[in-house]
Length: 200
Length: 221
Image (cartoon, rainbow over all chains, first blue to last red; front, side, top):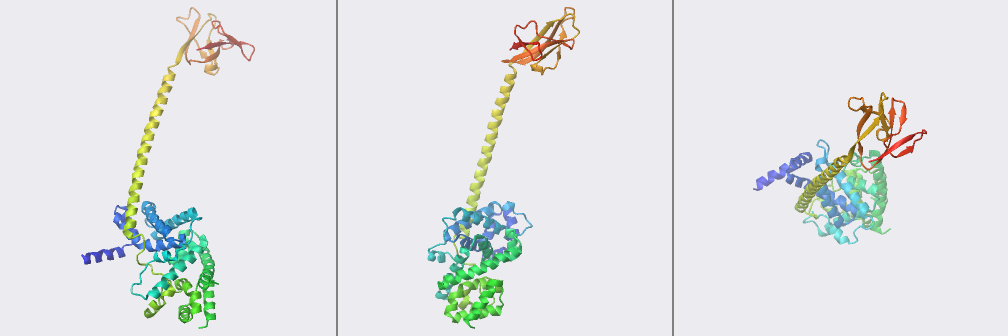
């Protein structure tokens, strides 16, 4: 049983996004679970940085996957899947952000913010772990404070480790434009994070 | 490394988004031992690490150092967050089922709307056909034994001559034509003899002046 499970996991790992999408489109709904496994954490952090609080981020994450599943038929096989899923996710996040702009605030409940982040350092020094998660929350808070056009690029480039080429595809902007936004964002992030820590 | 150097390197990073691995490692080494710089720069390190090592994590640092400095570098994209994968999947499928149900309902409603439209159209068409039965056959007749041709012209035929036909053998000089006209209207007309002489209908009791100094007959059906 364990061997079978191992084989299954290995197969899942080997399958490309396009193969999984193809399977899902052919009616294998369970295949879609692998898409969720692959993108859930990245999209959650994207949502968290974008919307600023765990409740909205969780709701948005759920809605993003519902939209992705529903409109999977519009994805053209042969294209890259990652830009497509991020475009779908960002469109949804922008829609929510603009709709709720007045009510959205970065979570004042810092503890809740910290609790919502993954804890994958089992066995690590509790103090180090706490500081690491404190860093994560500070980073997300700083990204959330950026204006929307910078926040999108920073979220994709830094939090999701995408290349500027990929980002330019997703946002339909030139690479120089992306680099210019990253330049502006770095300057602001440095100020925000320095001020945040030192109170300057 | 002096604090000033860390400031310069982080400025350099903000300006260009580039640092060497040695420069990055020297910042890490410094902020581990300098509380002031740790407070200032530790939250910035995940961003710098992404540009230097292409990861938002500890990356290429020696393994023994990773745990001790991971507080400076940040993100590990694993672990359990809410909602769990199974829960997301369940909600995706439930939402899709609801969507499909609504789409089916929408199709049924569209089909029902189409049936109603067809039904109403049928009623309209039937009514139109019924209305066509309100037309009546009107006989125009003129006695003109000398005439070689007689036509009727009126607003019902846009004043274009409709020729009358001699009745019977044609010896009695009576010309006739039957035309379908709709009920409930008043028509104006004249007879045209030999293609040149306009006269009102002598059998019509109602006549009106026309725009050319002559008279036209009126008929109400």
